[in-house]
Length: 208
Ligand SMILES: [Fe+2]
Image 1 (cartoon, helix red, strand yellow):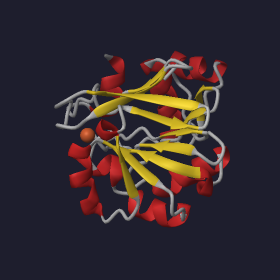
Image 2 (cartoon, protein in one colour):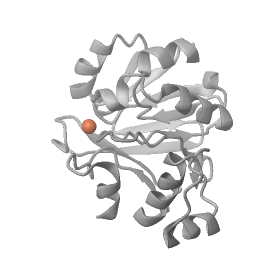
Image 3 (spheres, protein in one colour):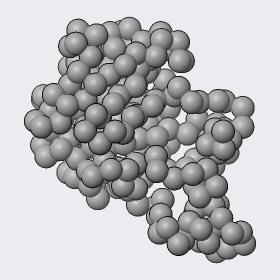
């Protein structure tokens, strides 16, 4: 993401305090840059961070939306804890029914648990779960009904209209079939959990 840790921490601090607290230079910095984490954050043209900050939770999922007409893509949508807020943010970028692909970088519940609910709301028979075959055998246990697009059986690429995404495996970072997604056109890398560090949580990771 095109922001630094201090900027994000400042804005999150502001969010968690209901917009009242304003006591640090970092908050002023965030305001000058007009980053509003209560709304989708633009990463690149048609690419948005649609996550939220979960207070006192070491598992901070970072969902992204790639707006791509009726072949839009949702990445690591998250769990039932934050699903309502994430749906609201998606709706600012596109219709849920525009989503054709859900990329799941690995099988963890903080990334995947909302998918069975989301796929009912998306309600597309051609909705596909994009993941690695080593992950799809686990992910199916969430009760997901959609078909699977296993990247290792698809030359590690996905073509969706004019959009082409490339996938790179990151074995055991931190799951056997984990991978990351790269959009060469914009230079955006969706890094999954490869920078995750449980102790200290989300903000601690961003500081490093
Ligand atoms: Fe994970």
